[in-house]
Image (cartoon, rainbow, N blue to C red; front, side, top):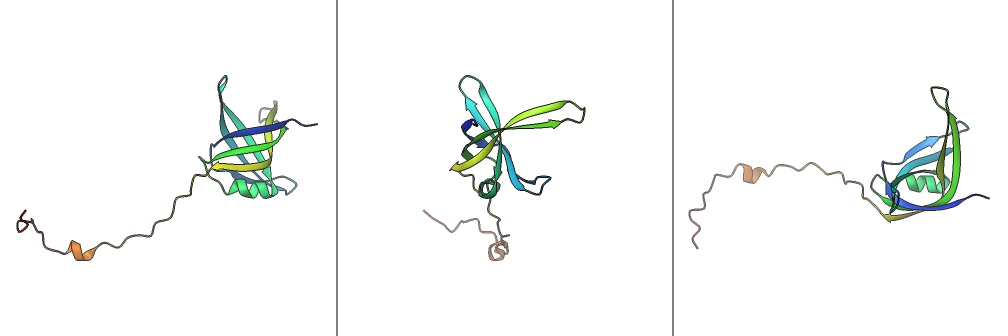
Length: 127
């Protein structure tokens, strides 16, 4: 039996696509959640398959809701000390408020007709 979790929050950074040692693709991200008692809580998300593609298409600042199960990860640090962290393994990802990607602007041509026009002090305009 695994613990089911529902977390909603804002993506801290753009999600990161990764590949495991066995060659399996996945995407990781961190979301900022808030709790009235504890304040800000950071939650690490791991998504596989279609959810990984969907998560990977989002960008920092997007608000999401993630349903999944708690997954424990153990590793040994550079100093030889073992570490354990809990991650949310994504089963379902819902975008609550998307942050659009900036559109690439085409460079504007200078308006040469107006740039070469003589200066007019508008004296001939009468009210």
